[in-house]
Length: 139
Image 1 (cartoon, rainbow, N blue to C red):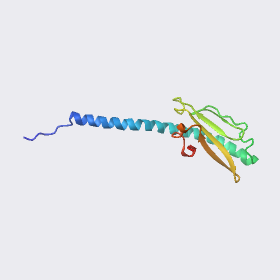
Image 2 (cartoon, rainbow, N blue to C red):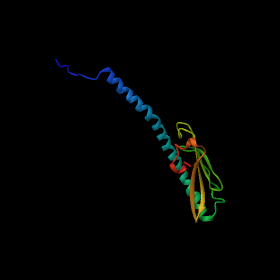
Image 3 (tube, rainbow, N blue to C red):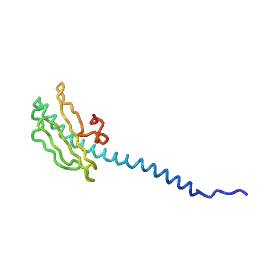
Image 4 (spheres, rainbow, N blue to C red):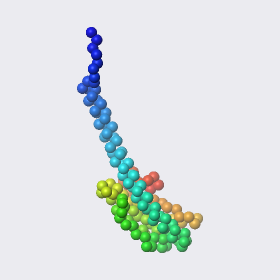
């Protein structure tokens, strides 16, 4: 007599659960890094207003000497703090709280006048932050 296969065996179900567990173990950390990177992108977006102000001051004065005078970084949104130096260097801080970025991230944007243009360079304070910041800040 032929036996009709009615469903999955216990071993087959256990293998499926194990495969799903392995996929979740790989996907969860990647997802957490992705959410932090999207929050860091918000830090860069909020820094854009300061970049515009510094660039405008440079175009009017022709120098970086007082490009950041009068600019202050207020803690709002994902920005936990920061500063704008008189030379136009912008420092933006993201905190490790759940309402901020989720990990401590510091982004430093430095202006340089080249050929009458303001060129911005971006960097972080440590190499541990590299996986969270945009590509242009990873050097």
